[in-house]
Amino acid sequence: MIEESSTKSIVCKIGGSIIEGVDPSIVDDIKSLGARGVRTVLVHGGGDQVTEYAEKLGKKQRFITSPEGIKSRYTDKETAEIFTMVMNGLLSKKIVQTLLANGINAISLSGLDGSLLMAERKQRLVIIDERGRKVAIEGGYTGKISAVNTKLLSNLFDLSIVPVISPVAAENGNWNLLNIDGDRACSHIAGALKADASIFLTDTEGLILDGSVVKNLTTEEAKKALSSIGPGMDKKVIAAVEAVEMGSRKSVISSGLRKNPIQKALNNEGTVIIRSDELDYSVEPQLAQR
Image 1 (cartoon, one colour):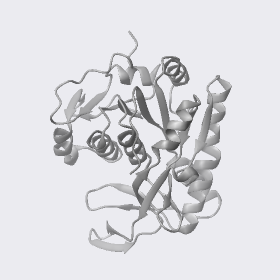
Image 2: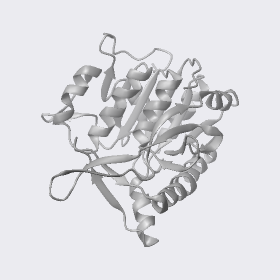
Image 3: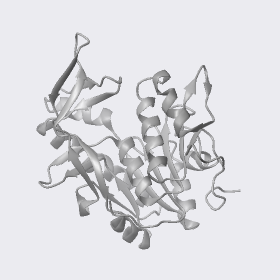
Image 4: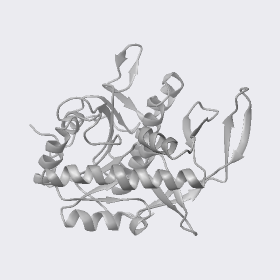
């Protein structure tokens, strides 16, 4: 993996639109961070929009469940093409459009562009079928990230450009387009950059267990809690743990629905996950506004 040291950087995962589902004041957060020299990367999702457009094109989407209960899209070649079209075409450009309109220089990239995200194609997947049995199926066009080109990101940072990254990777060796999970894209980029914070914005206040938000977790505590975490949030917790284990100082799962969502996440409003050997949950003072 190409690695390059980075100071004062965050990687933030948002949904498929910077307007829909995320408070518009996130733009103010990004401007404020940039003014203070904090390098920001946005990774976006948009699975619902992919499903909508795929079905408009007559391509019915198939969803599968792993033995661990993780649900995901099954991606054949045609779905991979539609996925790329929607993610790196429509959605990514809309986010860049919003940033530019608010005075933030931005560029949209897929993992294919500049070899930003390289991945190994999954040869087979083990899933739970309709009868509850474990079966192996052909892996399709999904991938596991193997390398992040941080040099490219560093060059964009030097030009004061905010990268907006869609979860599409390039397959090692033959350059097929691969669907990768947006949360895992965030975790790998944050880990490779050694980011000060990896932020996962969602529609809840954080990880909720037994009716209340869990404020702090170590990576080991988070892993042990996975069996009690529902679908959707489980993937975010896995990614948040991975980000820290790969080099991000901390991960925060926080609400994207409230005003200034990035700033609130940096102020530890949500669920903070740190290394099991780390005792300090505080945010780097140069990142959090006072």
